[in-house]
Length: 159
Image (cartoon, rainbow, N blue to C red; front, side, top):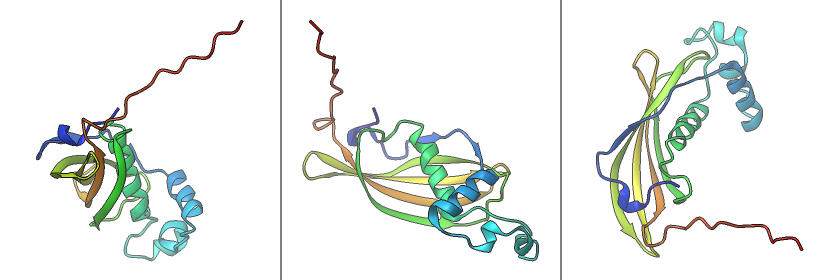
């Protein structure tokens, strides 16, 4: 279970594991999103572009970073909702690049109905140490008093 609103402390930091962006990731994201921009889907087109090769979709890398953060179990089961995202795309991510995220707590404040608002910053960094994306996410989080308890469910005994 993830952290409650009260457990997030300003300037707390976590580093995710790394993940390599693959050809399959980019191709699947083209199909999932319907975004077949030639910068992502056409090798010949990209050979003549400023990138020289295909690049990953910005929102794909953003999603990968959020998924990596999710693996830290910070918000799993305690996030009530995503309220806002503010994101900068600073550098291209190429197929074969490996990214990880540095997550930090920017702000916290109480909200109504036994919840709190937590703003997290994610710096997405590639294998050369370049920050490729930088963004914040504002989340509505459970508070300690409202945290959902895990309930053990047992099958009825057969007679």
